[in-house]
Image (cartoon, rainbow, N blue to C red; front, side, top):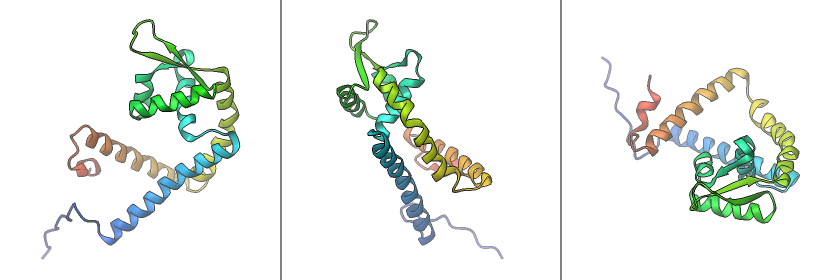
Length: 172
C-alpha cells in the first residue's frame, strides 16, 4: 500500500538538498569571481563596470537615466550612483543634466568607455565560452537554460510578494 508522501520541512534542507545548494552556490560565486578577475587582469575594469558600460552601449544614444540603469542592473539607486561616480572619475561615463526632468540626470557613455568595452569583449566572451559553453554539452546547455528561466521566474514571484511558497514555479 503506497504511503502518503510527506512534504519536507521548508525550514530545513536534507543532506542531498544541502549538497546541491552548496555546489550551486560555489558555481555561481565562482563564475562571477572568475569573470571579474579576468576583466580586472586583462582590462582593469570590474564586472560591475562592464555591466554599466554594456547597458549604455545597448541604449539609444548610448545614454540612460539613472532610474533606467537601476532597472536594468537590478541594483539599488545608491549603488548605481556610487558606481557611476567612480566610473565618471575614470572618464568612462559622464553625467548630464536632464532637460525634461531637473531631478533626473543622464549617464552618457564616453569615447573612453566605448573603447574599454570594445577592447574587453573579445577576451570576456572567450572566458564565458570556456567556462560555460565548453564545460557542458549542448543538451546540458538546454537544461541549464530551462532551469535558469524557472529559477528566475520563482525569484521574480518571490520579489513581487506572490512567491511566499515558490514551489508552484517548479511544478508542471
